[in-house]
Length: 255
Ligand code: PGA
View 1 (cartoon, rainbow, N blue to C red):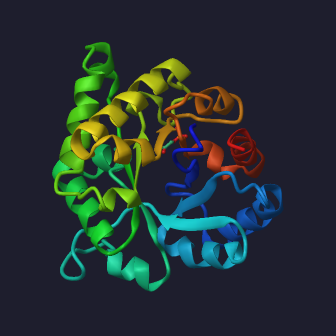
View 2 (tube, rainbow, N blue to C red; view 1 turned 135 degrees about the vertical axis):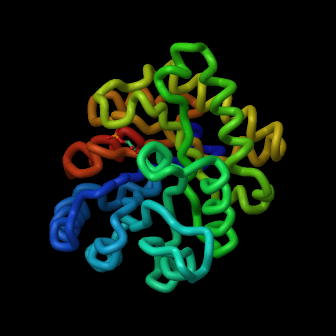
């Protein structure tokens, strides 16, 4: 983390977990545990149907609620999708785009990730843009090339001004939900590489101001070491974001 240059963001990705009632109970449990811990932003990205209840429960606290995906069109014949306009209409201003599970199971490509990113930014939303290599790519020694390529494709057409609303989440796919965490050194190496690519695309100032998170089995035990790295500005947390005590430990490490 480098809190003098950029905001630390601790974000939970609930994935397909928590009904509205379960989310309400979770937020009510968590609120007092994270109250006043303002050295990082705290966001939970929730399933669409859970968002209103989670927002209601989080009212007046330092917890924000976002979405897990967004479509690139405003409206139309896109069964099962939700637009940025719809999310804005219920007060959602942060959204995950390009999560590896979307890429792996739902056919998302860098092209659709780019379109979704641009649509969300155009609607004034903040985007948590996920990218990272799969195991075969790491083993083949092409992690850096893959990550640089993804960043360039996913951010194509995004302006330097819009980068104020972009958070990058480096999530090595082999570390997601597997219990295998990147070492702090591996996380730092790629997060720093990402910052270098951002500097190439947008200049040093934008690169230094952009929050770059690590995600992939971050938990209450490994968070302090990961967050201590200068280019790791927070976390995108799956499993550990469903347990108040574990999530609080990560928020504490970011203080
Ligand atoms: P995990 O998920 O923390 O359960 O590995 C992270 C993510 O998918 O964003």
